[in-house]
Amino acid sequence: MNNVKTNLGVTQPKYYLSQIAKSCLSTVQSVTYAGNQVTCPCCNGSFRKFLPAGIHARQNAECPKCFSLERHRLLWLYLQNHTNLLSEKLKVLHFAPEFQLYRLIRKLPNLDYITADLSAPRVMVNVDITDIQFEDNSFDVIICNHVLEHVTDDRKAMRELHRILRHNGWAILQVPLVGTQQETFEDPSVVSPEDRERLFGQKDHLRLYGRDYKNRLEEAGFKVQVDDYLKKLGSAKCEKYRLESDDSNCEDIYFCTK
Image (cartoon, rainbow, N blue to C red; front, side, top):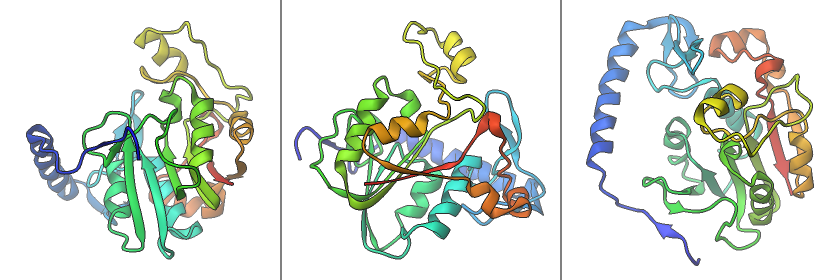
């Protein structure tokens, strides 16, 4: 594999200090928020409530123990209950792996699991998602959760993801999406962090996706199933895991095959 930087065994003293601090905070918060009103499927912790999170402080959003957010909890439930990730031998590529999911997936003995990012020091390989240095048909599974909104040429990235996915493989390609908005809004002239946060929802976002996101994926070659998994879970489980979503903040599962 050419032009791929390997980052195994990198020593990051500040990172380990940060992890120790997070571990201490996790322990304290787990006791402080102990209860049985909500449950986190990522760490199996139960609490009287979750913590606020996000730019606009979404209430009851972040697990006090493992720091998972709604999208992490939803995706882990889906991976467990609606995919073969836990049961079959698979080669998996996980872009920008979230710690909440990484710590669970890496333990699965049936997987050949590779983590990737453009420049993060603690992934296995550094890869440009618009110019992926893996051969065609390399992976059975690709997980790319809330990444494409940060990529300048997201269409090229989608084509690359399709290229490296094996036939009969599957990919979950999630983005923040406004369900009431039909067309994706993007404007290359918007460059200031303040304007990007105002228009796209976050300082490092380059667009605000609408319902035409499915069309973009299909144009890249994917067959796309948009799964409203929240409805399948039902209101009781959504409340238990705090997965509520509305059309203004849509988190359908974009299950893509080749």
